[in-house]
Amino acid sequence: MKDDKIRILFPSSSGGHLTEILQLKHLFENYDYLIITENLPHNQKMLTNMNHQFVRPNGKNRDIVFWKNFIINCFLALKIIIQFKPDLIITTGSHTAVPFCYLGKIFKSKVIFILSFCRTDSRAKSADMIYPISDLFFIQWKEMQKYYKKGIYAGPIF
Amino acid sequence: MILIVLGTWNMPFPRPLAEIESLIDLGLIKDEIIVQSGFTKFKSKYLNLTPFFEQTILEDLYKKAEFIVCQAGIGSIMMGLKNNKKIISIARKRIYNEHIDNHQEDILTSFSKQKLVLKWDDKNNLMSQINLLPGFTPRKYQFSEEQISKEIINFINSKLKS
Image (cartoon, rainbow over all chains, first blue to last red; front, side, top):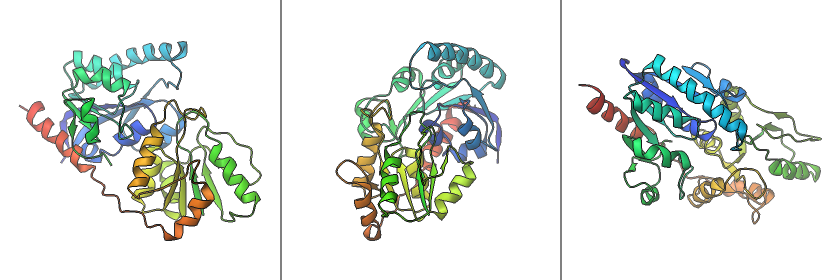
C-alpha cells in the first residue's frame, strides 16, 4: 500500500550514486518520491518511468563552471523543496545532493545519508559535509566506521 | 556476443578498447562485440560504439552476452552479477586521467578477492583472463538491498509518523 502522506526526495549526482539510489525500490513503491539528478542524456535513459527532475550537471573539474552551476542548483533546490515539501531527504551524495540536504534541513526535512558502496576505505567530501546534519548515516563497509562514528551498517545497498 | 561497458563517468577510458582492438587484429577474439562507450571516443576498424543504450536494452544485452568486460564501476559490475554473468573488470585509474581517484581499484580488488569477478590489470592482461573464464565459476552474490530499505521504513514509522 502506498503511503502518500510521506514524501521522499532523492537528490543524487550522476553515475554510481544514482545507480545505488535506484536500488531502493521498496521505497519508490511505498512512498511519494522524487529523484533529482544531473541533466545528462544517459540519465534520461536511466530514469524513464520514474518520477524525476533534473538540475544542472557538473563534471570532474571544480572550476568556474562548476561553481556557477552549483549556485544555480542551490536556487533550483530551494524551488524544488518549497514545491515538493519533502518529509525526508535520502542521498548517496556527491555535490548535487549537498544544497538539497542543507536547505531541506532548514525546512525541517529529515536527512538520511547512505555512503556509497564504492567507498571502501576513504572519506568522501559530500559525506563529510552532510554527516553533521544527517539523522541517519549508513555505511556499506564495516571498516568505514573508523571515519564515520555514527555510521550504521545494514549491509550493502545491492 | 561479448558486451563491453565503460560506464557513465565523463572522462574517457580508451585503454580497454585499444587492447580489444589489438586482440581482434591478432585473431584472438572472433566473437561479436557490442560496446557501450559512454564518454569515450575511439576510432576502430572493428568495433561499433554506442554511447548509451536505453536501460531496458542494456539489461537485455547483459542477459544475452556470453560474458561482460566492464569498468570497475559499481553499476556496471552489479548489473552483471544480477544476471549471473561472468565478468572481467578493469579499473579506471587516476594516473591515466580515467577518473579523479583510484576507488575503482579498491572495489575491484575486493570483488576479485571474493571471486565475484576476474580482475584485468597490468599483471593479468585481458587474454589471460579470457582464458581463465571456462574454469571460473563466480561466487553467487547475495543481494541484500531490502535491509537498508527496512531500516529506513522503521525510521519513517518511528520518527515521521506521530
